[in-house]
Amino acid sequence: MGMPTVRDLKAKAGDEPITMLTAYDAPTAAIVDEAGTDIILVGDSLGNTSLGYETTLPVTVDDMVRHTAAVARVTDDALVVADMPFLSIGVDESDSIENAGRMLKEADAQAVKLECGPHTVDLTAKLVQLGIPVMAHLGLTPQHVNQYGGYPRQGTDQESAERILELARKHEEAGAFSLVLEHVPANLAEKVTDALDVPTIGIGAGPGCDGQVLVINDVVGLSDWEPPFAKQFGDVRSEMENAVEKYNDAVESGEFPAEEHSHYEDDLDELY
Ligand code: KIV
Image (tube, rainbow, N blue to C red):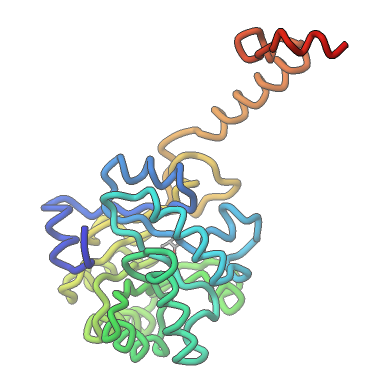
């Protein structure tokens, strides 16, 4: 896919919902891409899933550049979207532009995702004008964990639902090419989806969005903790535990390495 547009995304997915998954490294991205996933998000969930942090807050722009580049190197068909980490945007406009630009210039992403609020409307317009496509993200924005005191559902009362709808419209007007809606009531997600021309991609937002996204570790069964809206479709943890136990047993019993894993040089016998 070339430059991401609504048309590209809708055309690619056809009448079926858009599929989006996170990936943070090359082997996982290759699997996700080869399976025909429409969008790979290099989420700042990198912090929890791969870097051992409790939240996404410590993730840096350099972390995102390195992991996005690894994903983009092996991705042929999916759209690669890089998440902008905590405080990398929204503090100072030129820093925000430079940080977002690095995801395209250095890491070969095709778009960036911003955790949004009133402060990202003008920035979205500016980034889009400069040629940096923006995926907006509303509802639960995990970079606000300290304000929320956890990861609660959002848009559950009239006022906050209106705020999400209004911000969704504003980000579309500013040029965002799609919108992630996280952990909001399904009926709010349907309303937002109806109100926008650009596709919505839901996570914990019900079936009424134009697409769905989940964190790959939750999908394959590799997470210590999963949000209530995630679904596990595989059991990679058990597979890995099995393989590691078998390896340890084989080394301890002397079964590994066997003859076929070893090589000998006749000349070296003379060393003794
Ligand atoms: O960082 C992330 O993985 C995300 C998705 C959950 C949407 O923002």
